[in-house]
Image (cartoon, rainbow, N blue to C red):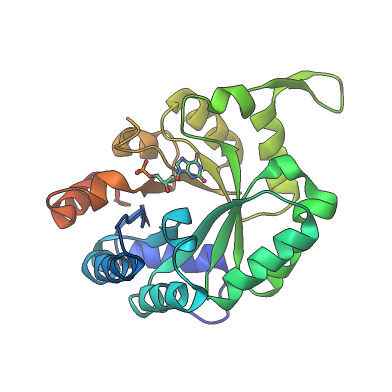
Length: 253
Ligand code: XMP
């Protein structure tokens, strides 16, 4: 897989595993040693049934970089890509420090917030990521109800026309040449309208499936390339069967 960029790598591993599922490894435990063990054990057990692993603050805050790298390395050993869900949201110099730590830990892609803008915000992160064949995924419309208060705002574009702010984010995602976008799988009207404008240009990652009320099959039919799922797999009595069922209904054929 060396030499391939993030998009090629994630699409290839997703097809090899016959799964569109990005597992949100949102493990909780009282002790951080338990967190690491639980995370590693979930990756070992579920790797044949998922496309990718996503790490969020659940692990990024309590674990040290060496422990995080252990999870990332294990995921790579099992032919999985690994996404850092930091929702990067700061000035360029800080964003670069954060993303450099992530790349050193072996992550393949990072989620970032387009609200911070390009110049002095995300530009150097995107450029450095691509030099290293890493990916950047932009938040375009989040999965929770309150998303409409920010990502659903109506604004004036450069031509003084009224637009939803997420419509501007789509244009920026294409112009900035990022690798994918996050669009919640909970509002299917917005998801399908965004998918119709980005088809073939950007991968769509849809969270909000299961615990937040979204439906995997409907999200994929509405244009999601990948579905991000956490609690309804991790806390399922039988995570393997849950995944097999989801994959049967949402994989590529
Ligand atoms: P659940 O348990 O709800 O977990 O299946 C979902 C995971 O995805 C994160 N999440 C989001 N990440 N944009 C993101 O980048 C979103 O709109 C979004 N909604 C949920 C959530 O933090 C958890 O890790």
